[in-house]
Length: 572
Ligand code: AMP
Image (tube, rainbow, N blue to C red; front, side, top):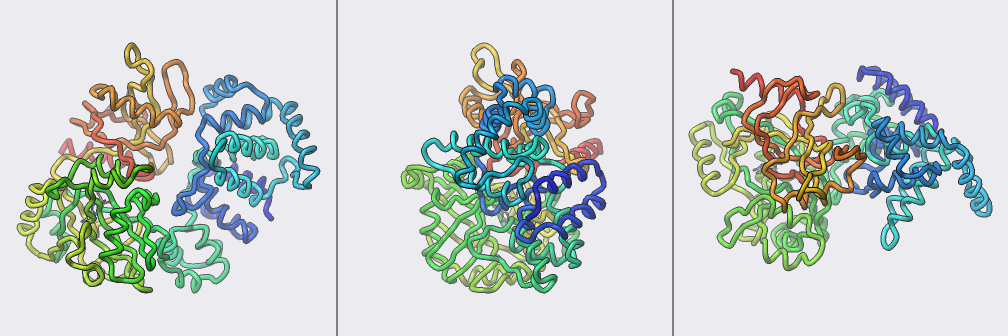
């Protein structure tokens, strides 16, 4: 067993480093010494997660539940926790101070627990927790469900705080709220695994793409080196990251880089990854959330249409009207989110799935095969006259004018534009590159994350009336504020947004709110301007909320680099 205090020491050491090479060295050394059982969870925790993203498993602890657990563990009233939070601006530091400030009440609680637990013999002395202990406790918290779940989660966390030292609790809090942010992401973990176990980075990357689980990859690398990594494969029922597209400014520009291009409609819907294993069918969103229970009609359609015994398919689910035309994007998200009365909903908002890719069929992984071969196989395993699902049309051409014609058809049919793909390219999970280009008519909008807000006044008193937007600086690993939206939002929308954001409020100071970065807004604007008023150094002229991108994660928001490029492009 490796002690959790060694993990916190590692975090402290990494926080002092700014270069990614040095971070890789330090984390690689840790991977070499950590107990084998604790290798996977160390990889998740260093990225600020407890479970691999593909599992969809969450602790289910919002900031308020965490404050409540902290308040109880430290014997400090919740108000005082909020004051501390305002002073420090960081949940980790707040936890550390709260628990160090009131050691007395903490130890009172600890001795109470010690007395309770002595009977079962499970009590751990503060500061002596192993990484597995912390993981085990967090897993118990995540597994709590049903009646009184919130109270039991708070108790579980209070218990964990009381068992750990203030410094350990500091990092537990940050991990619990997914706010570790010490600058280590997937790239550094991947390179560290390669370095620690002396295997090529490309092999680690391959294994990560197919398993979608760096913890598992680390364990395989340690166990069997490069050989074990190359034996990893796509697994039905485990979602892999979706391949993504880059913007192209013009069809001509896209064709200038390709001899031949595969052109198809860019459907206006939401991404759907379909896993079929015999009779078992599972559906995952772009964020890898399992939406199978919300879409019984799609399950039925897949079941009737797919002839392969096992398959992983990629496509776009579109909400359609009675004429088969696309309905607004929000409608498809309503279908994805619906938890009850799903049958009625599926009659009200029917879905058509347009399949455009194949990752796996009957024991064979297709991701390394060229698009043309994947498509050929896809057509072979989908019945042609199936209802509610079809393989979309794909045209391979050298002629930009033919692509322009398809573009006009797609727009006339109410879709977003076209995709221009490299026919020879493999399927690269999680990658956004030149092999898939998207062409849409409007000036590109920005996807920004909400990090703050303000309570409204007058008749908007109980609503969050304006929202602070930020882009991401992926070098410094921080969010940079770039403006606000608020004006022009209807009262109904404000009600819905306020409800969505309430659980994410981390701190309040008068009317000003600090909000946990989680929800992505797609923002349209007239122009990007230089501005000293915002940390990003830019501001948006006339920002307007186009839609809430519930289908996107915060890892997908636009970066300051992209905004700089757009600003330069605008000047030209
Ligand atoms: P965006 O959401 O603007 O980044 O555009 C990429 C998205 O377009 C993908 O994630 C898909 O959900 C969607 N899309 C629609 N039609 C296609 C298609 N034919 N090929 C790939 N992606 C598509």
